[in-house]
Image 1 (tube, rainbow, N blue to C red):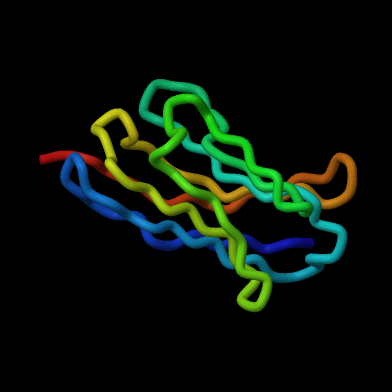
Image 2 (image 1 turned 90 degrees about the vertical axis):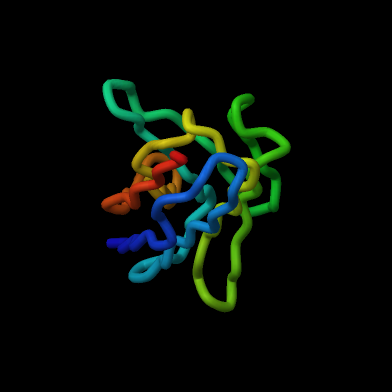
Length: 116
C-alpha cells in the first residue's frame, strides 16, 4: 500500500501563488508516475500535471507556463508550484501515483480557492 497526504491548499487572491506538497509513504518501490489532478465543483476530475520516474513532465494546456511539478526524493514528496493563479483554478487538488503498470493510489485532496 501507498499512502498519500496532500498539504498546502488554501485561499489565495487572483495572480497569487501556492505550493502544494504530497507526502508519499508506504510501499513506494516501483512508483513510476506521480501526478496532480483536480476537480472543480460540478466538473470531472482532470489531470493537471504528471512527472515520470525519468523526469519527463506533462501539463494540462490550461496550466502550462504557470504550474511546475517536481519531486524531492530525499523527502519522498511530489510538489506542485502554482503561480499566476486564476479563479478557474479553484478546485480540490489530488495527489496520484502509479506503482507498476496498473496500480494507482490517491490522496484525499486539498482545497485551493482563488478569489478576491
